[in-house]
Length: 273
Image (cartoon, rainbow, N blue to C red):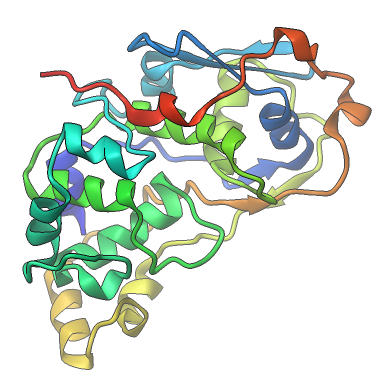
């Protein structure tokens, strides 16, 4: 499991908090704005408890401990893939079978299945359907197979920005945003919090049947994990929001005329060759 993380340069996560702050998370996403979309060091801006939160890839690197290095690429639409790799070649690499369609974890090579589950819980969080393989999931796995590092800070911020394009009741990155709130000196006193149930752990390795593995494959995979503690770094998990307008509670709504909405095309990322 750690080999793909090494290949992408993603092995130095700082330990993350075990609490998510319900009202603060809702305020963060409700007030979210995206600026400098054409710049590598773009920002996503928000406002929580009267204070501005303006992370960019460099700042996020300082917060989570992952070097601000690697190619800055984010795939949001199928036609974005053509700029970086043909879908046919990508599928051949990660499936080993020359598949023309790849939608489920059982379609990818055994050595990448646990890493895909990690992606589904932590990098591109899903509220369910963890076995589904999206274009960005497949691309991340492909870059792993090719040992071509990606910039995790860039990917996470793009995924946060991408929340504005989806009507969902799930608010991802609860633990990571708690660390962001602390970094930007947001007071957490008297705020309702929620314990984060770990979404990825050794239990997933032990229950490999959910990843399309046979009993023999599960035994082999556990043997290959060695003594690594797979629970250490895996704390970025989705969490369910509470109903209600956060700005009725926090009075922090931005003026609509000042807001720069995210569109589908901003998430293709940049290739640093």
